[in-house]
Amino acid sequence: MGPVLGVGGFLEAQARSLQGSPRPAGPGRAGPVRSSVAAPDCCGGLGNLDFRKADLCIMTRLLGYVDLSEPHFVAAVLAIVFNPLFWNVVARWEHKTRKLSKAFGSPRLACYTLGGAILLLNILRSHCFTQAMLSQPRMQSLDNPAAYHVGLALLGVGGVFVFSSFLALGFTGTFLGDYFGILKEARVTMFPFSVLDNPMYWGSTAIYLGWAIVHASPTGLLLTAVVALIYMVAILYEEPFTAEIYQQKASQACKRS
Picture 1 (tube, rainbow, N blue to C red):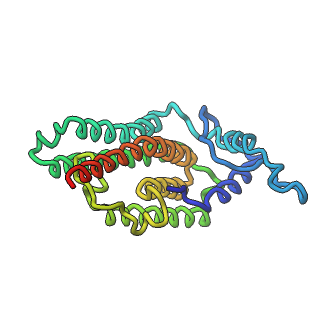
Picture 2 (picture 1 turned 180 degrees about the vertical axis):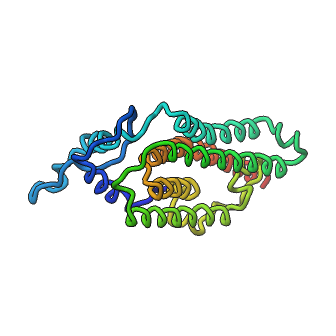
Picture 3 (picture 1 turned 45 degrees about the vertical axis):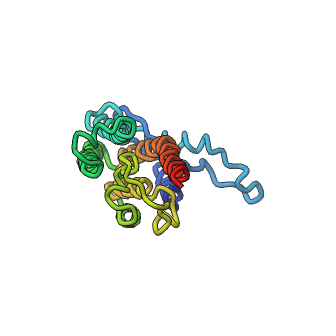
């Protein structure tokens, strides 16, 4: 998968516009958003950019907006971290023991039950995300029609990736059916997998980013960064394990033949 492109430059411009304006009172920190401190000179090109300083620059611009100890913010972070942890732990336990399949009488029913639980948890996560944004200040430089339309565009793009991923994979393919022994005959290569790896995860991230921009919320931007980070960690754990499951299937097929 690759992150949604085209937003970094916009956020950079918005962050620079905060320079010289007072910050709201209150403790807090912002998540890392890449930017540049100053434009390169005519001859130095990109070699003059110090991205480490740029990250600190953006963080200091957003410092006064996010209260990391606010209860809604804490609840949102916990929900964001818990969801992938939950489905990975449960799915791996099922793959190892088959206890869910035995308890529900079939692998498909067990997979449908886990998928339903994941959907409910994702609804709770989105609720916590929204409440965290509403409980903290808006960013004036993002509170304008241009930013609002960028946010809407990201919501649309993310929705397309998430929905088309679901159509391509089906319910069991989306909700870890391979851990229940419900394997596909071949790797899915149709859209959106033809243009992006892990489009379900990155589409979801784009939706959260768009939602944050629509609400002109620096809290939402920070939480979106947490979402992206957690998804990247999940991908590191899920992809090798899934590949191993299909390697085992191929080995068993070879033995039978």
